[in-house]
Image (cartoon, rainbow, N blue to C red):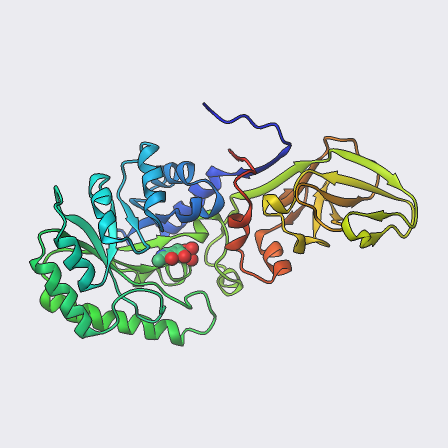
Length: 372
Ligand SMILES: Cc1ncc(COP(=O)(O)O)c(C=O)c1O
């Protein structure tokens, strides 16, 4: 049964924008280079099932998630496309991946040995991860590569179908570290080709690398943040090589508007005091929705104009200072456009001293996602 929504607070996800962003990226790629849509963390807070369907309909050939749980949720929703699990999976959980036809990440001989002990109905597909400088996961040296390739060659339980690496600085203006990672990858690739003759899918680029260097991208890209219409960094935005449209916006409606006299205070701690007679609106969103207390002082949009958040943000409600008495029910936009003004995920990220990736991810599940 579809969940009913009563609260007048919602995140709107513009699936058309996601389709457009994907289309622009695919147009930049060489013909034989395909897109893996990265839909981990509930599609960066946008809703994994709906985004996955849209991404596949818009030309993505494969999906990537971080967790086995995320992959299973997509299968449960009837999605049959190939799914790559980027995170580490324990050998004992491999039968689930085989049963659900998932592709796992593998880079250790011990892991292969443990999987060899399992009684699997068919081999598990894996992509081999090479750590060329991210420092998170993956094999790093030619010796490790030789060992893992040899273990895979003799394994009946592990079937290699792809190879990948992840860039740590592809979004930065300075490209020295990125070039170093590309070179390390190319060296490992040369070595690998000398010992492995079966075809594999090679993919290296995240959004930043694929937008900036679409011709360096081997067989595929892993497209995440920019599918959602967010630039990986100001450096990539400033290069103006792609015109992304944000897919995520966040809205609510005034539940109560009052006039307060000069000297009256608002919210916990009475930290805000009206300097003169003021109109104060109450908005039903709070820190339990991921609209965290550090956003005090941020602007929201009402009637196409900026209004500041005043006083402390509470668990479920936030107060704003209005320029006039608006009726209850008036729309409040916390992220997104009203008239000619826009508050972007980048603005929220700047206020919170973080990156825009975190913004849609932090909006809690209790804020319903509405699809357009
Ligand atoms: C291994 C891996 N590949 C690709 C991506 C997608 O990166 P982006 O969102 O910058 O496109 C991520 C995201 O964190 C990742 O962890």
